[in-house]
Image 1 (cartoon, rainbow, N blue to C red):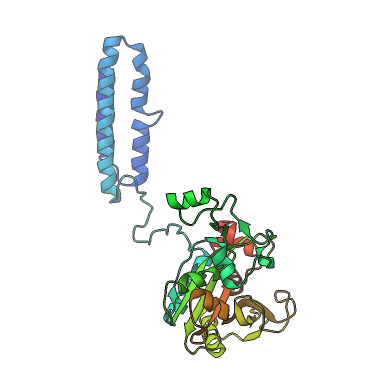
Image 2 (image 1 turned 180 degrees about the horizontal axis):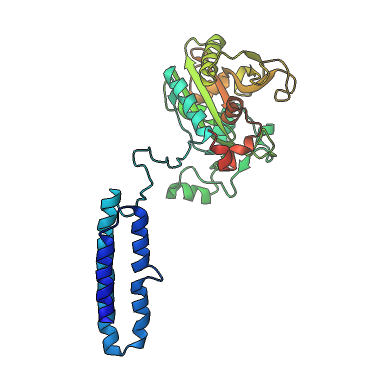
Length: 360
């Protein structure tokens, strides 16, 4: 069997020197190292030998196998000019295949665009908490306890959410002594408008800010409504600001978001925290104000609520409404994205379907 190994080695050396292409290389590799190759046949015969001879021949066979692999690797490099794992029929001068890349979510794209537009007009971005208390979300914005927005069907109130504003021992003792300590009721904010008092209490006018973020309302889901949605609120306070200033800012926003001039209209609307209040519509992107199912034949799409800041809101913040004035606005980012990309169902944004998301 040792002579057979010497014969295999000599035969390999003779054939490997004649290899000129990858096809010949593969044939030699199969003849000597394949499942039915010469070395495999030797290994299969080891079981017929005694223990001592089996160990000796097995060692010689494995060493020869190792040597053949090393020689083949060197030959492969010479005939292909590439590494062992490369195929000879690959043109290495061709550009490589691009690996699939992730996509920024369409809502994030629109939000980033909106923030950049407002920042270019001198606005600052202010973030407020998603878990809010009823004072900032309702009371401070002229929304009394009996207002429909305070109803359980509209608001996600947190269970066992009452907490004492001061948690030290003195406060606890006062509670135990039946002192009047008003608990703080917590909820998931229903609108980013809740930021107004938070900001005004800690900053001096004049200023112009926007607050983007996720809001929550307990309502039925359909193609245009969901229990969660993104909203962008804005607030501008100065000595002399008017609806004309607001109109100019919003027209510039829509022009840069939709990359074209958009026709808008302002109509009266009611919001407890502004006076007067109004709503903003834009001409339908599908029919350009003519008639289509998306705008339900009206030619317009509602995108925003706004108005001049109510004097009571200024008073709650410690501002003199005779000296300061301003306007506030709020728009649904989901609705803006639907209009921009022509999406008919808002729920697609939250279903994580890659077939949908890869389009953006």
